Image 1 (tube, rainbow, N blue to C red):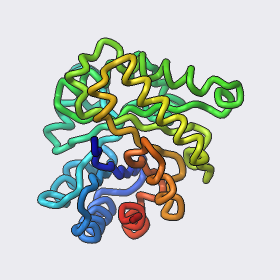
Image 2: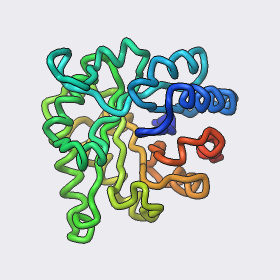
Image 3: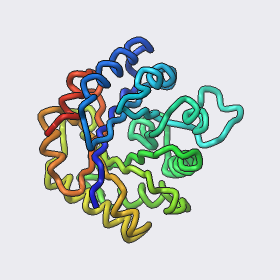
Length: 251
Protein backbone atom coordinates (compact mmCIF):
# COMPACT_ATOMS: atom_id res chain seq x y z
CA UNK A 1 0.00 0.00 0.00
CA UNK A 2 1.24 3.48 -0.84
CA UNK A 3 1.47 5.73 2.21
CA UNK A 4 1.61 9.49 1.61
CA UNK A 5 4.81 10.88 3.19
CA UNK A 6 4.34 13.26 6.10
CA UNK A 7 6.87 16.07 6.43
CA UNK A 8 6.20 17.61 9.84
CA UNK A 9 7.78 20.64 11.47
CA UNK A 10 7.85 21.03 15.25
CA UNK A 11 8.52 24.67 16.02
CA UNK A 12 8.89 24.05 19.77
CA UNK A 13 9.09 27.25 21.86
CA UNK A 14 10.09 29.57 19.05
CA UNK A 15 8.40 32.42 17.13
CA UNK A 16 6.02 35.14 18.20
CA UNK A 17 2.63 35.38 16.51
CA UNK A 18 3.79 37.67 13.68
CA UNK A 19 6.93 35.60 13.15
CA UNK A 20 4.91 32.38 12.96
CA UNK A 21 2.48 33.89 10.47
CA UNK A 22 5.34 35.18 8.32
CA UNK A 23 7.09 31.80 8.26
CA UNK A 24 3.86 29.90 7.58
CA UNK A 25 2.90 32.27 4.77
CA UNK A 26 6.27 31.96 3.04
CA UNK A 27 6.24 28.19 3.47
CA UNK A 28 2.76 27.87 2.00
CA UNK A 29 3.78 29.93 -1.02
CA UNK A 30 7.01 28.00 -1.57
CA UNK A 31 5.27 24.62 -1.28
CA UNK A 32 2.15 25.46 -3.28
CA UNK A 33 3.27 23.15 -6.08
CA UNK A 34 4.09 20.17 -3.85
CA UNK A 35 1.99 17.09 -4.51
CA UNK A 36 1.72 13.65 -2.92
CA UNK A 37 3.12 14.81 0.42
CA UNK A 38 1.44 16.03 3.59
CA UNK A 39 3.15 19.05 5.15
CA UNK A 40 2.42 19.86 8.79
CA UNK A 41 3.68 22.64 11.04
CA UNK A 42 3.21 22.81 14.80
CA UNK A 43 3.62 26.28 16.31
CA UNK A 44 3.07 27.18 19.96
CA UNK A 45 -0.44 27.30 21.42
CA UNK A 46 -0.75 31.08 21.22
CA UNK A 47 0.11 31.06 17.53
CA UNK A 48 -2.34 28.33 16.48
CA UNK A 49 -5.34 30.53 15.55
CA UNK A 50 -3.08 33.00 13.74
CA UNK A 51 -1.33 30.31 11.74
CA UNK A 52 -4.63 28.54 11.05
CA UNK A 53 -5.87 31.69 9.35
CA UNK A 54 -2.59 32.20 7.48
CA UNK A 55 -2.61 28.70 5.96
CA UNK A 56 -6.32 28.41 5.29
CA UNK A 57 -6.95 27.26 1.71
CA UNK A 58 -3.30 26.16 1.33
CA UNK A 59 -1.78 22.70 1.27
CA UNK A 60 -0.34 23.01 4.78
CA UNK A 61 -1.76 21.16 7.78
CA UNK A 62 -1.79 22.54 11.32
CA UNK A 63 -0.48 20.62 14.30
CA UNK A 64 -0.15 21.21 18.04
CA UNK A 65 2.81 20.27 20.19
CA UNK A 66 0.88 18.78 23.10
CA UNK A 67 -2.53 18.56 24.75
CA UNK A 68 -4.13 17.69 28.07
CA UNK A 69 -6.12 14.49 28.34
CA UNK A 70 -9.07 15.98 30.25
CA UNK A 71 -11.89 17.72 28.40
CA UNK A 72 -11.95 20.66 30.81
CA UNK A 73 -11.29 21.52 34.42
CA UNK A 74 -9.00 23.29 36.87
CA UNK A 75 -5.78 22.58 35.01
CA UNK A 76 -4.07 25.94 34.83
CA UNK A 77 -1.98 26.40 31.71
CA UNK A 78 -3.32 23.34 29.87
CA UNK A 79 -5.19 22.98 26.56
CA UNK A 80 -7.74 20.27 25.76
CA UNK A 81 -8.22 18.30 22.58
CA UNK A 82 -11.52 19.93 21.68
CA UNK A 83 -9.96 23.38 22.16
CA UNK A 84 -7.26 22.42 19.68
CA UNK A 85 -9.82 21.09 17.20
CA UNK A 86 -11.82 24.31 17.51
CA UNK A 87 -8.64 26.28 16.74
CA UNK A 88 -8.22 24.44 13.44
CA UNK A 89 -5.67 21.86 14.56
CA UNK A 90 -5.54 18.56 12.65
CA UNK A 91 -2.47 16.81 14.10
CA UNK A 92 -1.11 16.71 17.65
CA UNK A 93 2.35 15.62 18.80
CA UNK A 94 2.16 13.37 21.85
CA UNK A 95 4.96 12.07 24.06
CA UNK A 96 7.85 14.01 22.57
CA UNK A 97 11.10 13.22 24.38
CA UNK A 98 11.34 16.79 25.63
CA UNK A 99 7.91 16.43 27.22
CA UNK A 100 9.03 13.16 28.80
CA UNK A 101 12.34 14.59 30.01
CA UNK A 102 11.42 18.08 31.18
CA UNK A 103 7.74 17.72 32.08
CA UNK A 104 7.70 14.16 33.39
CA UNK A 105 5.46 12.76 30.66
CA UNK A 106 4.94 9.03 31.15
CA UNK A 107 3.64 6.22 28.97
CA UNK A 108 0.47 6.36 31.07
CA UNK A 109 -0.19 10.04 30.37
CA UNK A 110 0.74 9.50 26.73
CA UNK A 111 -1.94 6.82 26.56
CA UNK A 112 -4.54 9.16 28.04
CA UNK A 113 -3.59 11.85 25.53
CA UNK A 114 -3.84 9.42 22.61
CA UNK A 115 -7.36 8.53 23.75
CA UNK A 116 -8.29 12.21 24.06
CA UNK A 117 -6.89 12.97 20.62
CA UNK A 118 -8.71 10.20 18.76
CA UNK A 119 -11.92 10.99 20.64
CA UNK A 120 -11.77 14.47 19.14
CA UNK A 121 -10.73 13.30 15.66
CA UNK A 122 -7.24 14.70 15.97
CA UNK A 123 -4.44 12.78 14.26
CA UNK A 124 -1.95 11.72 16.95
CA UNK A 125 1.77 11.67 16.31
CA UNK A 126 3.08 9.25 18.93
CA UNK A 127 6.73 10.00 19.65
CA UNK A 128 8.96 7.19 20.85
CA UNK A 129 12.71 6.72 21.12
CA UNK A 130 15.53 5.35 23.19
CA UNK A 131 18.16 7.26 25.16
CA UNK A 132 21.86 6.76 24.52
CA UNK A 133 22.13 4.67 27.69
CA UNK A 134 19.27 2.42 26.60
CA UNK A 135 20.81 2.04 23.16
CA UNK A 136 24.27 1.18 24.50
CA UNK A 137 22.70 -1.35 26.87
CA UNK A 138 21.05 -3.09 23.93
CA UNK A 139 17.56 -2.11 25.07
CA UNK A 140 16.38 -0.16 22.02
CA UNK A 141 13.70 -2.67 20.97
CA UNK A 142 12.59 -3.34 24.54
CA UNK A 143 12.16 0.40 25.12
CA UNK A 144 10.22 0.98 21.90
CA UNK A 145 8.02 -2.07 22.48
CA UNK A 146 7.00 -0.74 25.89
CA UNK A 147 6.39 2.80 24.64
CA UNK A 148 4.13 1.58 21.84
CA UNK A 149 2.29 -1.01 23.91
CA UNK A 150 1.69 1.30 26.87
CA UNK A 151 1.03 4.37 24.75
CA UNK A 152 -1.68 2.64 22.73
CA UNK A 153 -3.08 0.47 25.54
CA UNK A 154 -6.85 -0.10 25.35
CA UNK A 155 -7.21 2.10 22.25
CA UNK A 156 -9.56 0.56 19.68
CA UNK A 157 -7.50 -0.09 16.51
CA UNK A 158 -10.42 1.27 14.49
CA UNK A 159 -9.75 4.67 16.08
CA UNK A 160 -6.08 4.62 15.10
CA UNK A 161 -6.51 4.88 11.34
CA UNK A 162 -4.83 8.32 11.37
CA UNK A 163 -2.08 7.37 13.81
CA UNK A 164 1.47 8.45 13.04
CA UNK A 165 4.42 6.95 14.90
CA UNK A 166 7.51 9.13 15.11
CA UNK A 167 10.73 7.33 15.94
CA UNK A 168 13.13 9.86 17.43
CA UNK A 169 16.24 8.41 19.06
CA UNK A 170 16.66 10.77 22.00
CA UNK A 171 20.43 10.93 21.53
CA UNK A 172 19.94 12.38 18.02
CA UNK A 173 17.49 15.19 18.81
CA UNK A 174 19.16 18.57 18.41
CA UNK A 175 22.64 17.06 18.56
CA UNK A 176 23.47 17.03 14.88
CA UNK A 177 23.70 13.24 15.08
CA UNK A 178 21.49 11.05 12.91
CA UNK A 179 20.92 7.33 13.19
CA UNK A 180 22.59 5.47 10.32
CA UNK A 181 20.41 4.22 7.45
CA UNK A 182 20.76 0.59 8.54
CA UNK A 183 19.71 1.40 12.09
CA UNK A 184 16.74 3.47 10.92
CA UNK A 185 15.63 0.72 8.55
CA UNK A 186 15.95 -1.94 11.25
CA UNK A 187 13.98 0.05 13.80
CA UNK A 188 11.22 1.08 11.41
CA UNK A 189 10.82 -2.50 10.23
CA UNK A 190 10.64 -3.61 13.86
CA UNK A 191 7.95 -1.02 14.59
CA UNK A 192 5.79 -2.02 11.64
CA UNK A 193 6.07 -5.68 12.64
CA UNK A 194 5.23 -4.70 16.22
CA UNK A 195 2.04 -2.96 15.09
CA UNK A 196 1.18 -5.96 12.94
CA UNK A 197 1.58 -8.52 15.72
CA UNK A 198 0.28 -6.56 18.70
CA UNK A 199 -2.37 -4.24 17.29
CA UNK A 200 -3.66 -4.86 13.77
CA UNK A 201 -2.40 -6.08 10.42
CA UNK A 202 -4.55 -3.52 8.67
CA UNK A 203 -3.07 -0.72 10.78
CA UNK A 204 0.46 -1.98 10.11
CA UNK A 205 -0.13 -1.49 6.40
CA UNK A 206 -1.48 2.06 6.74
CA UNK A 207 0.29 3.60 9.73
CA UNK A 208 2.93 6.16 8.82
CA UNK A 209 6.19 5.66 10.70
CA UNK A 210 8.33 8.76 10.44
CA UNK A 211 11.86 9.54 11.58
CA UNK A 212 13.04 12.48 13.67
CA UNK A 213 16.42 13.54 14.95
CA UNK A 214 18.54 16.28 13.36
CA UNK A 215 16.81 16.01 9.97
CA UNK A 216 18.37 18.45 7.47
CA UNK A 217 18.33 19.16 3.72
CA UNK A 218 21.53 17.15 3.30
CA UNK A 219 20.20 13.92 4.86
CA UNK A 220 16.49 13.96 3.98
CA UNK A 221 16.87 12.17 0.64
CA UNK A 222 18.84 9.34 2.24
CA UNK A 223 16.28 8.96 5.01
CA UNK A 224 13.33 8.94 2.61
CA UNK A 225 14.90 6.18 0.53
CA UNK A 226 14.83 3.83 3.50
CA UNK A 227 12.11 1.20 3.46
CA UNK A 228 9.33 1.82 6.01
CA UNK A 229 10.28 5.49 6.47
CA UNK A 230 7.10 7.39 5.66
CA UNK A 231 8.25 10.90 6.46
CA UNK A 232 10.15 12.97 9.00
CA UNK A 233 9.56 15.07 12.10
CA UNK A 234 11.81 18.11 11.84
CA UNK A 235 12.81 20.39 14.70
CA UNK A 236 15.26 23.26 14.26
CA UNK A 237 15.46 22.98 10.48
CA UNK A 238 11.72 23.64 10.21
CA UNK A 239 12.00 27.14 11.68
CA UNK A 240 13.34 28.64 8.46
CA UNK A 241 10.82 28.50 5.61
CA UNK A 242 13.58 28.30 3.00
CA UNK A 243 15.38 25.41 4.68
CA UNK A 244 12.18 23.54 5.48
CA UNK A 245 11.09 23.92 1.85
CA UNK A 246 14.32 22.24 0.78
CA UNK A 247 13.45 19.34 3.06
CA UNK A 248 9.89 19.14 1.75
CA UNK A 249 11.17 19.16 -1.85
CA UNK A 250 13.85 16.56 -1.23
CA UNK A 251 13.19 14.80 -4.53
